[in-house]
Amino acid sequence: MTFVKNKIHTEIGTDLNLAADYLKKGELVAIPTETVYGLAGNALDTNAVLKIYQTKKRPSFDPLIVHVGGLEQVYPYVKEFPEELKELAEAFWPGPLTLLLPKQSIIPDLVTSGLDTVGIRVPHHPLTRELLMNLDFPLAAPSANPFGYISPTKATHVVDQLNGEIPYVLDGGDCQVGLESTIVGIEQGQVIVYRLGGVPVKRIEDRVGPLLILPQSSSNPKAPGMLKSHYAPQTPIVLGNLEEMIVKYSANGIPFGVLSFSKDYGRFQPKQQVVLSKVGDFEEAARNLFSGMRMLDNTGLAVILAEELPEENLGKAINDRLRRAAAK
Ligand code: TXA
Ligand code: MG
Image (tube, rainbow, N blue to C red):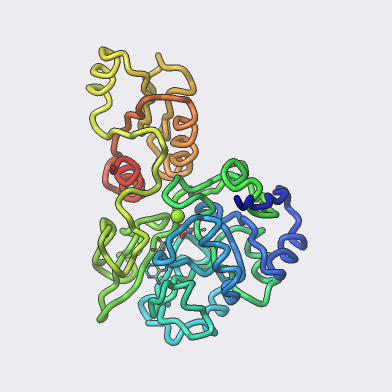
């Protein structure tokens, strides 16, 4: 006998009460944040958390981030808040920074994949902050994409992939940062970056001094989700010198797309080319990265040719995503 899962109707809207009602009933709701859309459920309800892993088809060894409405709301869920990390929270929350803190037992082990730290952040989005303020539980929320695919930065991206899987998508418009949060923890007094993201490393170092950066940690057990091949479109991505690659692929007659930092190659069809920021602005480039990759992925190309950005500011995090997307 084959078992056919009943699909549910997925609605998009801005009704905070409806979103809150679903979450209180243990259902999942996609929520907007400044980084990417999250697939949210009650972080204190193991059944809701289980639904998140199932809906995302995510392995249970990859822990979830817990979202709260403000700094004060962190305390019930953590055993301690090291000074250095508190300073970062005060500087960057609400914002694209996740802190790894020793967890209290009220946070289910399923949320943290059995680790004794919990990743927590205060997202910077008016709708989601109001939602969090109206709930008496925090929200566990990974990015609202199937495991391994590109994170969604628009409500329609969520619906494209999770239609029929969740009842509601809270539409908060386009994500203003466009890259996932920077993940930071501390071990033996050393502040460590586990994932590059929306807060540039330099801005963190300005506060707490030199950081240890462990972002390429595909085998690092502390951040099991940082798999090398991630954030990936279906179409292969090749990184390199765009001028040279364009000559080579044109000669081969292979249908290709182009993703550049700031240079407009003009002669391509609009659906074949993405210029992340014509003025070379890193923040604009970050905002456009995932939607640009999605657009090229849906054009039916054989390959996407892309270039790395300068390794400064958000360029580091953008390059990290490009390299992961290009990894086999
Ligand atoms: O910007 C973001 O962080 C978005 C929005 C929705 O908040 N969320 C997000 O979640 O990117 P996700 O699940 O796609 O990525 C979270 C990553 C995972 O890869 C996981 O490895 C890491 O955070 N993580 C979470 N808790 C951790 C912990 N306790 N220790 C180490 N890594 C952790
Ligand atoms: Mg993700």
